[in-house]
Image (tube, rainbow, N blue to C red; front, top):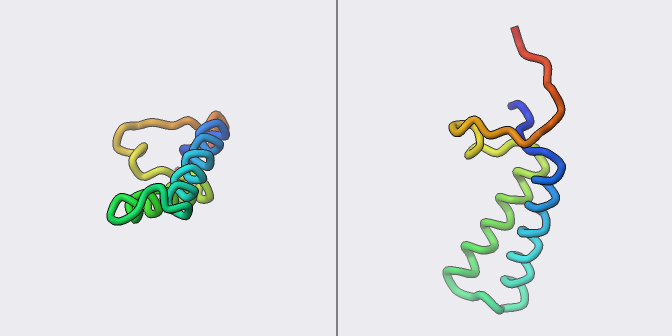
Amino acid sequence: MKTNIGTTDRIIRVIIAAILAILYFTNVVTGTWGIVFLVGAIVLLLTTLTGFCGLYKPFGINTCKVKQPEKQ
């Protein structure tokens, strides 16, 4: 997997994940929506840690500014 998430994108993902988790754990959002928020927060954190977003691949989006060597 090539990294396709840049630094700014990672910061935004962590902030959104924190907001979703806080809303879930403070019981502001409960039930099915609460679970959806928690799963969304987990997905955002995992994509931040791996540096790869599967949804970016089909659309050709790459927010990572570092040029990566191509495999031959």
